[in-house]
Image 1 (cartoon, rainbow, N blue to C red):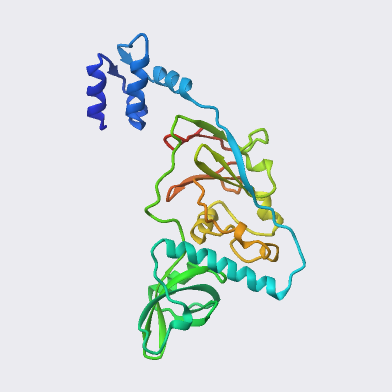
Image 2 (image 1 turned 120 degrees about the horizontal axis):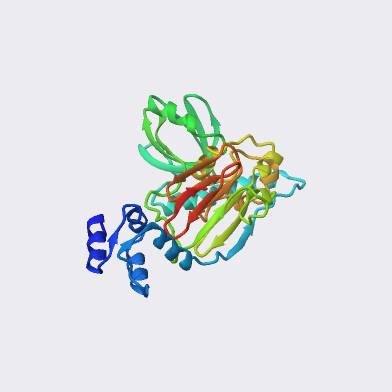
Length: 315
């Protein structure tokens, strides 16, 4: 419903909407129409306080379930462990690319007659004007020119990427390079019913990142939540800020670079199950939406999240 339809619907019920009430109704008009119909005494003016009473009565207690904890343990490593790590990371992120519709060929299928093609691989070497990527079948050097030199600055060694290449004479040139990222077509997930949760840095709050020393996934209704404690990255010697969380989403990997402690279980770090909400205490404080994922960095700030509308309010 647009504003005119909302006003007319309530006027037909003999109710006028105040200016403060209209923005609230706009979030979910059908819900408020049905709830006002249930009122024993119909108000002449529908005010903000009446709507807040309706919301309070319909709020459900959030049932929070921890679905997965990510605990990295040190272990003695062999050469095979590194090879298996890169292979597993490559395979899992390659699946993300192919599920998004990218049709790529393996590097060993590139021949002298191959002119334009997509391939997927891990960046093994990188300079200001070229990258070398590899997959389980081989490696290829790609030259960058023009705007692609600038694009290379957004990528790091060990990133799994999809590249579109063109052969010019005896060289291969980079024409496009992609992170696995979050698909633009992704729907914003919402709870079926009105449900509001508070997020802050107090250790009494079960969703506070200060309660934990390692990342974990939790679920409220169908909302997938990833909690990223600052202490996890500090313990690994990783320098990170809250804006870098978006980079991790683009890479679909929870570490910005390869660390020995992560070699054993790369599958725990690949973001195959995308979070709808990320809660962290990595500074600076931030509230941002990125392609359907809400990122909240708490500290001195507290937030209230309506999981039914996915609106966030600083409190």
